[in-house]
Image (cartoon, rainbow, N blue to C red; front, side, top):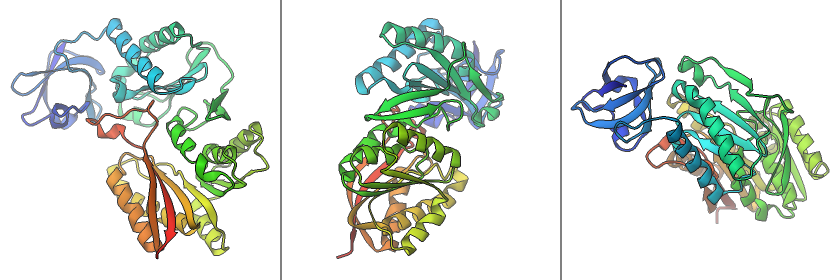
Length: 398
């Protein structure tokens, strides 16, 4: 195994428990290696820091697999990682549909596997883990079968552009026999048809499962506005909870068609109404028309995927939250979230606070939540915490 030597002062985040080494922290590599291959990582003074896979083409040059010096990364090692990931989920969440592997948070960096009933969807984002993908999936199928879960098929959604930075082509399609790519799942007693081939990312956002359930008590008998509804998940939870009427909005006509299909699946087509519109344009129109809602839900896509665009993202989050607050009846509720890890909890809180000030509203916090526990985050890997979810009661100033 080649030895990778850090510069003096390099690897600061790694030494705090972080999972990565950046290319500008590396002094040299002694020995031969293949891109994506395993290397033994040493500090500038020779101290052994563990084993990771090294990709010289990537800004994230090393992704650590083990902090044990000389660790052997073989099938048995990967089997232990897979067992730990599945065992954890079995203790913290309903496994009928859930995230089974969450990259660095499960010590399998760059790999995501979601389970939708008896279908697995895999997303591989790093060269080193891509080479281990087939073995990990075999082990995962064995572990699930041992626990009584059937696996009917596997579909790959490695179509994220970050693969290009790893020197990997985009990849999508069946890994094994073909099957129907629309899969019905049930979550919080709501039924969904998940399109794993055409839906965003792996097909459905499982990370909001418990946050969607958290709005149920607020929605009984309520008039609800759900913005950025995607395939209707928050809107349908509001309908199931007993909302008297729900308006759900998204800019994607495809997403709205899927949401309408999901509404019919749940018998909510008369309660939940869908509209294809730009939320930034629609909110001022609703305000001008004098509309008021008992509950407003803001679940936007990530407005920033890099540090360089954070400033513009803050403007976007402030705008929708300000407009959303103005549409909430006095004493009503606002559920608002951000799914970008660059939008830190403190920055997101400050942005909401600024929006409330400009909207002349007082916010009373009901809950603060993050992603569901099948998407765990490591305190030593800040990037694994990405979802922030607030529920506020919105009141006029007194």
